[in-house]
Image (tube, rainbow, N blue to C red):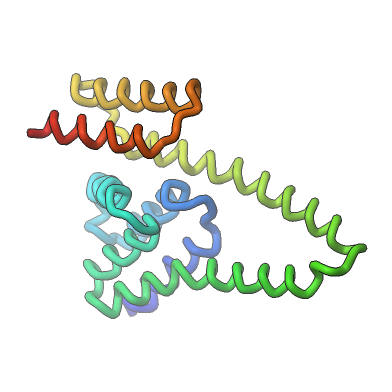
Length: 184
């Protein structure tokens, strides 16, 4: 039964979640809380989210694999990964097939282009809301000095990236070096 629950829960997240790991976090958290996975502990879920964001790869899939592994071993991890991945793979295959079939039709092409632009714009707003929600849920609510310094650092990095239109890769590397120096 746990195998079906894992597959079904992450299939729903894959179907209804848009915008990447940060946007899917609330949906994954909801599934964990409803099913009692990871002990139903929001702190554990937030820590898992932080760790999976630090490792390269698709955050939502990494979270699904870890939760599946913790709850049902290797088969649980595989089923959770399949559940969260299948909707996106199916959607990409469907879009690709549709685009290939009608790309040369001069009457349909402009309508299709406008429809896709409208769809993408709508999804952006929804994903932004989920990302804001995940930021509020993951960032600790107490205002200790460590959390304040992290908040100030995040604000400064965001300001530098937005105001100076800087390439984010050197900023990420600098932040990593500073974090490593502070840790040691």
